Length: 301
Length: 157
Image: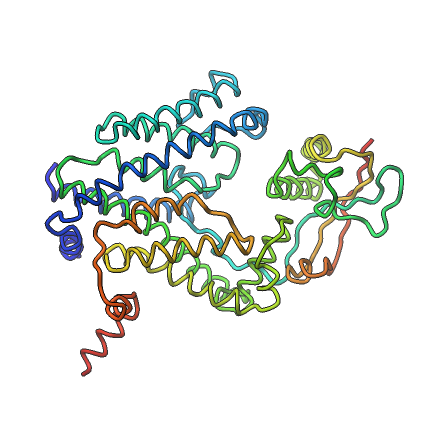
């Protein structure tokens, strides 16, 4: 199995043809990171004004116990801004990339220290970590780039696995499951009741439950097979667009707002250096499940 | 590091992340125990068709009886300061208060009451904390609940 995985990775990376494009995309990540950090400066005062309510520092910011809350909050955000700016300027050097990662880690740990974290920035944190290991060698550079793509897609597969595992659990408990036509409506109304926020498309889905259920099933398909797509470059761009649309959809229905990962889809998957252009028919035949049926059909004929 | 060793490291990293996330989901005391690893089990359970939760309802505001009682989460800004707490924070706070009242934890109840009243209620009021049983679709459509079980009544001066 390892041999087959190694072979697949070698085929994707090939002779290093995507190196130029990959090298163009990496600094874009740091530009986004800086832009994001800079935006947080704007929110510094409200952050400090919030005070220490429920503040329970995570391990990366253990040092905040030795300083007051306002100083810690300021230091973390200012360091994040300068670290990400340094990484944007000198992204080809490892030490600035380490700084960029540390800036992100401190900020991530800080925002995760108020009870349950939102996970909006988890992917950013791990991508910044993986980029620390970016080597100069072309093939290894592309390998790290692919590792980032695979990691992002793996987290979506984990989410898909979670939904399927829990569907079985709920089925045996006699509860509504992912496969119940009202599943989408139950998700949306539960969240709307809790958040008391207006929703653009929530009411439409409540009136027509299938409009919530069918996209939910498509989302589970999309999520479950995401990691498989890491090994199918012809689908990188399609999957990036589909996952971005998925987040736009959950935002419109009021289910959840998950903006931050979309920037990573743009940088690492929509701009994938491994993308192979194929006809629409060939691309469809590469889709997980469809490819299996196609292989079975060919073996029978 | 050779290219082969780099490939092994990448696959190892992905496997470690996957396994740690899953182990954290199923075995850790809290899903966040393995920070910064995460299982990504988000919205994995479909919400129940009949749900129960704790809710605050105003019975009196400014000395006047409110009939029918007004749900806190439907209350206007003067009673519930949306700027100071997000709906999610409010939800967690009310559920914690309901839990504390139900298990007769006087100290925790007093602490949570203070937190709610300090941050969110700007008027003198009488309010109750209840356990409500509802269908989420009906609650959202027309605000109807199937059953309300009052747990305690508090006065805010």
